[in-house]
Each structure stands twice: as C-alpha cells, then as structure tokens.
Image (cartoon, rainbow, N blue to C red; front, top):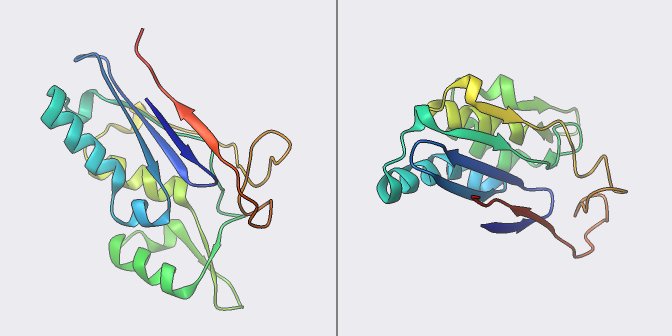
Length: 153
C-alpha cells in the first residue's frame, strides 16, 4: 500500500491475527473526521480485524510547534475533540493556535479501541527536518510529496 503526503499524518495499521494491513493519509480535515477510525472500520468489514489486535503507527509529519492553524480550524477540533482540546491545541496571542495532529490521531485510535501499548508515535517532524523530509510549510508552498509505504511479506 502507498499514500503520498506533505506534512499530513500517515497512519499505519497492521493486523497480525488476520494478516492484513491498512494505510491512511490524515491531514487536519481527515483527523477531524476521524480517518483512523474509518480505516479501522474498513479493516473490520474487509478482514475481520479487531481494534484491540491492531498495531498502529503515526508516521513522520508536522509537529505541534510547527503547525499553526486559524481559529476556524481550532473550532473544528474543539467540536470534534470535546474534552481533549487542552491536549491538542495551544492558543497564541495572535488569535491562532498550535495544533498537535500526533496527539489528535492518537486520541482517535484510542477511542476506536486500539490499545495504548499498540500505538507508536514518531517524533520526526517534516517541517523541522527539511534536509531529510519534504515539508509543504518549510518550503513555503513549493510542491512536493513524501511517500508512505506498507506491505506484507
């Protein structure tokens, strides 16, 4: 499987019981709409996967320190993640917010039934590491992509 992205979050899913895999691209809109949960539900329908048996990873993507969003985006997250706002949003004096997509996607996976010990979260930011990874924000809007790949042997 493959997906392409630039600063968004690649979500990796491995079901060792049913020998199945899943891979999703989750930007801010995908995260608000719980792309991780939708992928788990699709794997359940197609392969019989159970959330508690899945191994998941949140791949290299933009970190909270680098990801400034508008108040409109913050409101979407406040609605979608009621009770968790303080974990994923930091208000700034300029009226904008720093958004933690890693934590938001972790919350989605946990809410979907994935066990905490089955979730790996990268600490590799695409924007902080432009010498290693492409970042839409770090390149000031230039076009480029990263690829996320997952396969079964």
